Image (cartoon, rainbow, N blue to C red; front, top):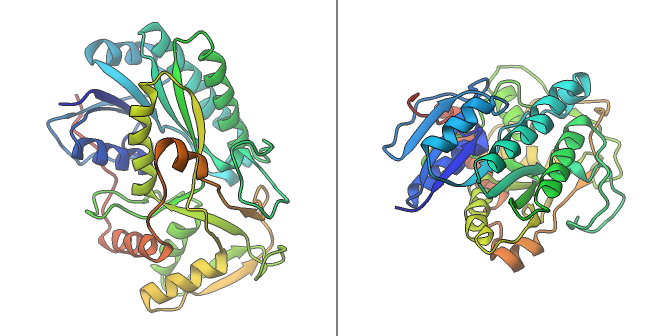
Length: 333
């Protein structure tokens, strides 16, 4: 049996996929999740679940004392850009301050390794035609991106005395469901493009709104880089071994391919063999024109790269949506 990994937000979308893959290859997994968004229905003898918030220092101390945690994968966060603009304090509390609470407990309990779920939103608006590298200017344009970047800076500062090692992953647009259909994007409040297309399509005659068709792109709509969730999790598993070298790094995780909103819709129509009823609206505050990753650093150092194309991502997302399967979770302990 391999070591034990603590997964914060392990009943949520990406966290649940991490749990699935970790268990599959022999890790013991401990999950902490508030269950505000995630749902519990998965059981495994090597999976233990605690319900609660990572700002609860007593609960964190209990988790670390009851389990021999080697590494923390920290996914717990709010992720909606529009909501972060409406209620920024919610994001700074949950995404930034909660990370500080987790790090303080890790340090107290001598837990050395953290893999942090960050975002390409830290880069903000850009005017480059190149793919964004990790050394690109940091300029988040919404509270969500700012909350994640502030958490990154806290992690880096707290690592300087050599008591914490980190890998920070800046995600581009994560999508799809795992092949076994054990987990997928089900949150009704989610603002990501692909699940919103699916949610809209499922309701007869409901229009799907595209925010902005006057951007300086090939068809006037925003360009994004989409990465398959299971490919993304593979990078996290590689990071567990990387941290054993007592090194710290920041990596982008993306496919290195950019698609406009209209291109995603057209690809979905081919996969689903039906038309999407869409309509254009004005630009949405906080959205960038174009965001495409350079993931060459992860390829060089971790030996990782995205493998799954956009059609396959959409196929797995569609199948998940049709099956109406909920988030992965576990029995409460």
